[in-house]
Image 1 (spheres, one colour):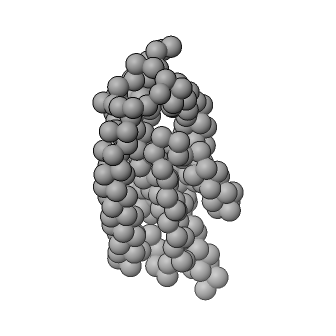
Image 2 (cartoon, rainbow, N blue to C red; image 1 turned 30 degrees about the vertical axis):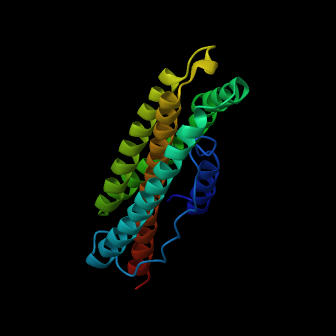
Length: 210
């Protein structure tokens, strides 16, 4: 069975490597309490659905605020100095080529371990459908985030940062925000998968003790 405390520790590490310098980050969701019924049951699914809706509503609110602030920053960028433009390019390059890779690598490592745990419990005859669904979403969101990072790389001028226009600045910031949100969604779905396995193991232990 997965050592969940290690997973939580790594998830916190992943949060630290967000796209903060290009798109500001915010807090993490709260851990759900142990569920009384096994994953796949009505109570667990309702709890997960409500938490997911709240999570996405928070993302939408934060995104709207970000876009409003970005419009103002785009106007300010018209007067940006060459020094500021080079600094922006340097930070953007470091994030998408190094820090983003650390974050995605950590998530992929956890996804692989969750998949192994799912296979083990499936072999034991357990219903792991809830964990599988959450893991599939996590992997899909991570793949989308990687695509956004590649789009950012393509937009950063090689050796010509002083030519970044307000429009290009806006594009890079927007893509960075989208990539950051996708990473958060991937991490949240992965947390759901881990919680599903944890709850499933807890229910199994209950049955064995009776």
